[in-house]
Image (cartoon, rainbow, N blue to C red):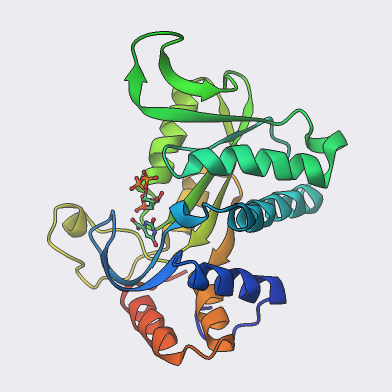
Length: 243
Ligand SMILES: O=P(O)(O)OC[C@H]1O[C@H](OP(=O)(O)OP(=O)(O)O)[C@H](O)[C@@H]1O
Ligand SMILES: O=C(O)c1cc(=O)[nH]c(=O)[nH]1
């Protein structure tokens, strides 16, 4: 669902308002990693002040905790935050999980990669907990075409970890990128399934999002920002998935 009548809890509207006031959620013309041109952009790098990082890390922790309560088989040892925007997230969400339930989450660790391998000192690609034999949850900022998530999955595999879940702050609810788009020819307008659905099918693990595009549209409607609602709805119509 991606319309302004979609019901969202009050805390989501508050989070969206905070994101708007802090320029985390902005409107204009943005080229995405997938080369799609979007009228809105979510810059999670700007959750960079104490009350902002507290708000978003608490929201991730609550969502992970809710999944733990929904599915008693959902256990994880490590939060893996891919460079760069995943780095502060994995550390701060670990801290919030311990605040929520230290008996349950006190031993959860965090880990992140470097974008370039370090060739001195302790060396290597990884920082934090070792992943070998560990149940890992990927924590990242935004999912559009899923390229960043697939890279993170490969890192976990290469380190001998087991992927058990994925969580992002925002699922942009976009259809998968076509071969034509990958080759730089733009979208062919064809109907395709969602990125998030495809990642769920490929991995078989829960893929969670604190907010979806539908939530952003509903929240902006609650805030009376109808111009932005229209822009996001038009973008959704262009790239909406079949599932
Ligand atoms: O689903 P996708 O199409 O892959 O796009 C979303 C990803 O792209 C950006 O990361 P980027 O790789 O630019 O790294 P950053 O964390 O250094 O900003 C963004 O932060 C998301 O993680
Ligand atoms: O798809 C992307 O590259 C992307 C979208 C978005 O809203 N925010 C972001 O950091 N990246």
